[in-house]
Length: 197
Image 1 (cartoon, rainbow, N blue to C red):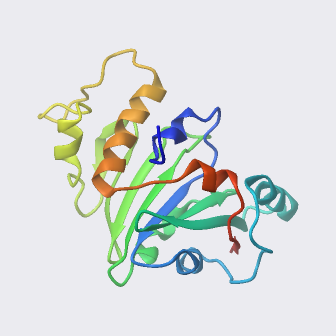
Image 2 (cartoon, helix red, strand yellow; image 1 turned 180 degrees about the horizontal axis):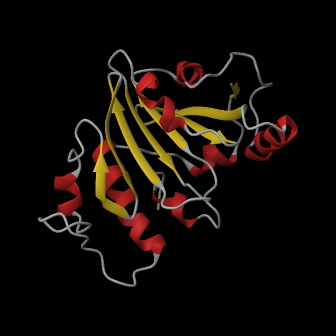
């Protein structure tokens, strides 16, 4: 699948959210998410990030590992955090921000987009018929063109389609629309990390 974002659905268990931001560097993204510079010895692996989260034994603190690709900074979330609640704040002062959250305990996976301090568009991946935000129909033309929704707004994917194929289809159009990439080799390696409060 290359270095887009569609590969996220192919993991046995997609367990971490990802926040993308265009217009700020990775460290500023972590700070806007509530991170403290120097709060984690960096860089660390995914396994080490999960270890820190387990050692914290609290739902109030999480860890993010950060990097950049294709003009976007990214932050991979570990713990109970949900970057969507801070997305408008992350996007202040002309920044664009996208949040993908797997919602493993309460599907579906979620997509959210914010720009310049405003929540623009959100929907469940697999539940694209229900959209909200200041411009809930922002991606409606792409959803129709990709065969996710009919022009009248009804669901258009084949009945009985596997959730992975369904989710991959929507992630493909999000990837294309925003030019998002999350390189697998970077995620698998060591990345700078921050403790999120």
